[in-house]
Length: 194
Image 1 (cartoon, rainbow, N blue to C red):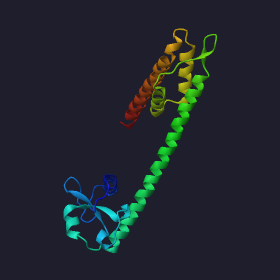
Image 2: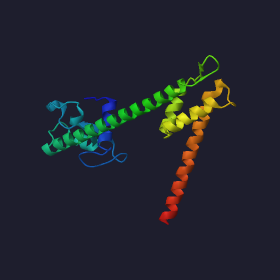
Image 3: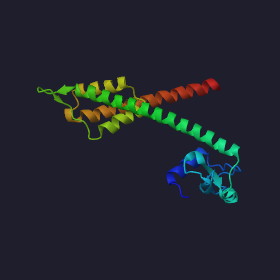
Image 4: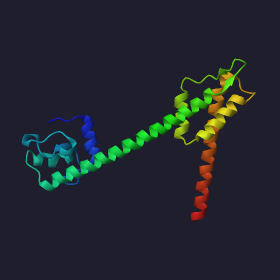
């Protein structure tokens, strides 16, 4: 019975690309996805009934009933896998919220800055969210971001229409400073360990 490519991928990944019957691994073994309890005997396409199996083991097993230990092992592996996926999803969700809060804090501070006698807001680049998100990903603190906003929007040398570009240059300078500091830390650690 055919299973979806996505399910096949997840089962092979869960089983570490290793045959659950003989231990053969890819690329030496041509792996398939096998129904532990065959469909002919009432098995389903759910991941807790699917395992990675090399062609020889899969064909040799055919539509025979598996031993209880293997069935239980597959169920336990699937439970662990599901729990791990749920933890990763939670971490990703939390990280996404933090990233969005960072972008929102940038926008709030940016919008609070005005120029000219009418108090016009400074224009943003079309892809400003992507740029600010990148600074978050690189570890630039929101405090550093706010400092860069202040510098870009208060400099007499910067035309108001170039403020975002100047801000981005300031933020990239912070990234460079962080990388230089990290190199110094690594060098100091190497010296200490020798």
